[in-house]
Image (cartoon, rainbow, N blue to C red; front, side, top):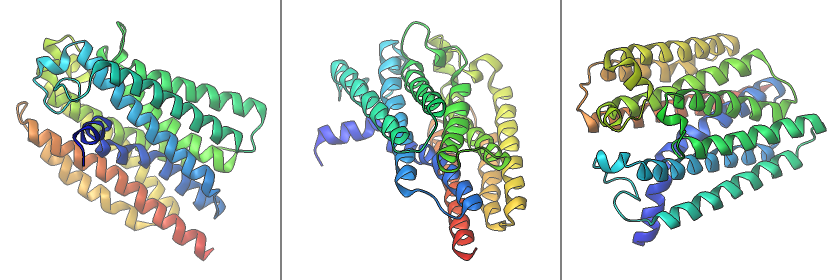
Amino acid sequence: MSNVFKSWLSASRPKTLALAIAGPLTGISLALFENSSINPFQAVLCILVAMLLQILSNFSNDLGDFKKGTDQLANRTDRALANGDIKESQMKAAIVITALLSLVAGISLIWYTDLTPTDQWILFLIGLTAIGSAIAYTMGKRAYGYNGFGDIFVFVFFGLASVLVTYYIQMRTLSWEAILGAIAIGSFSTMVLNINNVRDIKKDAENNKRTIPVIIGFVNSRIYQIILAAIGSFCWIVLILTYNSPYLAIPLFLLVLVLHAFMNLKQDEFMEYNKQLKYISLLTMLLSIILFSSAVIFATSS
């Protein structure tokens, strides 16, 4: 594997793609429960759009933090620009290309779906907003990720939009089950961001990056993590009872163990926070996979 490919693979942060896939996979699963069938092509496009938006967000985050000096201050050696593996001009080009690919994939999804003109325009505007938000997270003088709004972005686009748009594409309507699934995935995804921000709380405060943990403090950010876990778990438990699928509860037991470990971490345990990031991302992905498996079994037996 060439060093150039490794650098770009690292910059795309493949571990975060599990979290990106969880949203559309949840929407697909809930549609299967309701309709016993889905359009595979539309499902694949929804997952592709989610992955491209995640990569776009990662590239933009890398560039934004680099230009603001955040990564340099934190002595980050795992960022492509900060360690010199990728040039700033190359990253800017990659952001443009990834944004265009996201736009093309989104338009293709809308084009190949039998929607009313109003629905098409609404979904197109949601897509444009998602692309713009992914770029503006850390880039620009008014980057909202530096002003405490990153959590809202993750909850809305990784949870609400990802699940509900996918579900609507398949069903042409929404349901309370889909809303519960969207809130759950949004909550778990926001937990991942909170872990990242708690890990970087000292360096972010020094660089005037006002994340939620910087604003509310280390202790309160752990309480905030418990609240997010409780909201997501409650919504997921309701889905378990709705579909009578006890297997969906397995990741929740693991979540309790991971959350307990998180609560005992100190501020300077950098590597342990990285493990937490991986664990919560994989648990969120596992939730969606088990939900999908249960939906497939339900659809084939009905």
